[in-house]
Structures are given as C-alpha cells and as structure tokens.
Image 1 (cartoon, one colour):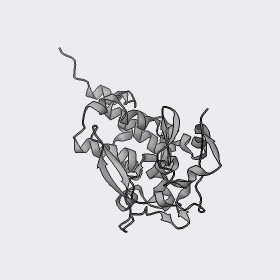
Image 2 (cartoon, helix red, strand yellow; image 1 turned 120 degrees about the vertical axis):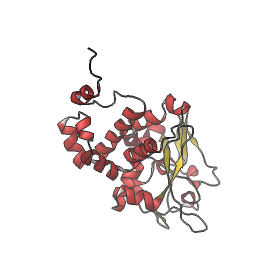
Image 3 (cartoon, helix red, strand yellow; image 1 turned 30 degrees about the vertical axis):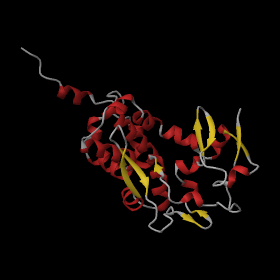
Image 4 (cartoon, one colour; image 1 turned 90 degrees about the vertical axis):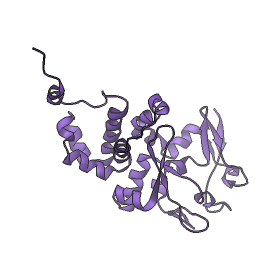
Length: 241
C-alpha cells in the first residue's frame, strides 16, 4: 500500500500560504458545519461568505467560499495562528494538498510551495481519510454525490430557475428547507416515518440527508421518497365509463 509523508504546522515557512487566492468549493455538509460553527443561519452564511457559480453541464448551482477583498485574497477564516474554524474546515481544506487519482494519493502542489511534503509523518490513504474526517463526509453526502454524478445531469442542462432554487435550498440552505418541510404541504405529500419526522426537527444532518433524497426524487428517481397513497389516488384520472 502506497504511503505519503505530510504534516502542516506553524513552523513551516509556507504556513497558511495555501489559504489565499484560491477557489474553495463548498459541499453541502461544509455549509452546514461552518454555519453552525459561526452561529449563523444557513441563509446568513451563504449571503456573507459565499458566491454562486453554475456547474457544467448540469446547470445546477455550486457554492464557492468568498475570499477576502485584501490584495492577497485571503480566506476569511485564516489567522496568523491558522484556521479559526479548523475543526469544521471545508472538505477541500481537509484533502489539501492531496488528491486521489486511481485510488492513490497524489500531491497537487509543488514541494517548493508546500513544505509539509518534506515532513516525517507518514500516512496511508485510509489513515489520512480517517484523520481528516473525510469518511463522515462520504456517509452524509452519499446521496448528494449520487445525484450530481448521475448520467442524466451530465447530458442534460437544467435551466428552470425553480428547479435550480429547489436544489440550492435542499442541499445548501438547511434552515430554509426546514421551513419548507414543516410549513408547506411537504409532510402531507410524502409518507415519512414518524421517527424520521421527529429526528429532522432536531437533527440538521438528518434534515440535510432528507433534502438530498428530495432532490433525488425530483431529478432522477421518483422512488427516492414515498408519496402518500391518498395523494397518488387524487392524481389518478377518473376511470372511463
């Protein structure tokens, strides 16, 4: 099994240099953890710290961390001592400076830019994944990745603004999605187990995972959520006489 050496700490000349003038794409679980860490609603976090781009070819929105307006375009959370939200840092920061290609770890920065590659701490890819908490991301975002990598979305652009907003709300704006679930007809349409309804009232991660299932239902798989029998019956055309 291939191993690699890496460690990042304040003693390195490049410490925090990678935290500026870069594009950090945020996953849904990133947004959830970061907004919670900062004590903000998801809407406040998105408005204050992010900007939206459009993924191609799907046409779906993606969320990018907004860098600072200073000449170095530093991350808003970086300090001379390091990241002030380190325990809830984004997925991209957890992986950096490693990228997985063909199930093997590959450094994406030159050693002259990332001095941590010369450190003595040795890792396997599995050890690195566990240490960085990446396995938890795999569990929480499994359905999200299934949707966004689906062949249909690689071949067909979604142009409907309402569908794009549905995706943005369910995947990134968990507080708005909570209001939608409990203040609309959502629970009258979908047949959710009582224990799940109770859990999503208190557990934002469970609510986010429900959002992924709703997006899957709407975009690629009508079987991802169960529609109530009475709703289906009302939608059926009357029998012909």
